[in-house]
Image (cartoon, rainbow, N blue to C red):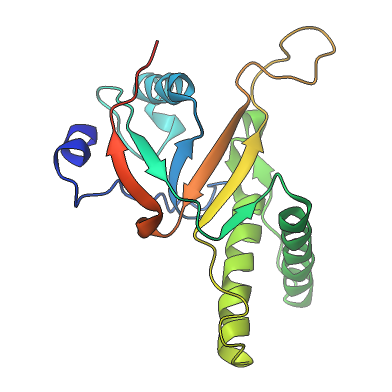
Length: 185
C-alpha cells in the first residue's frame, strides 16, 4: 500500500474507521516522528491483533499536511469543545439509559469513549450548521491533533513516557499536500 501511494500522486491512504480510534475517523500520522511510526508498524506486523489492518511488511509513509481547520487538543479551546461534547454525549446516554463507551486496554489503546466523544463533536457541528442555518459558523474540522502519552515511565517518577508522541488524524483529504518516503533510523 505504501509504495502504491508514493507511486501515484492521486492515491491516498485509507482512513481508519475503528470505533476505538482515539481521534475519531481519519488518516493517522505521527507528527515529525517516522521512527515511532516504524515501531508501530513493526509491532502490528508482529502482533496483528493490535490493528484491523494486516501488515505483512512494515512501511512508513510521510505526508506534507496543511492542518486546515484543526481541532487542536494541545489548545485550551479545543479541549473545552471536547469536554462539552463529552457532557452532551453523557446526557444522551443517560436519557436513553444506555451505557456510555469506555476506554480500555494497555495505555488505553482502545479509546472507545474518546472516539465516541470526537465523533459526537463532529456530528454536533454538522447538525448545528443544518439546523440553525449558521452559514458555516461551525464548519467541519479538517484535522485533529493531540499528544498521546504511551508506554512506561522514562525513569522512576517521570511524567514522560517512552513512546510519547503527537498524532494527527486527517479527515479532509485536501489537507494532504503530498506523500514522501521519510528517513528512519
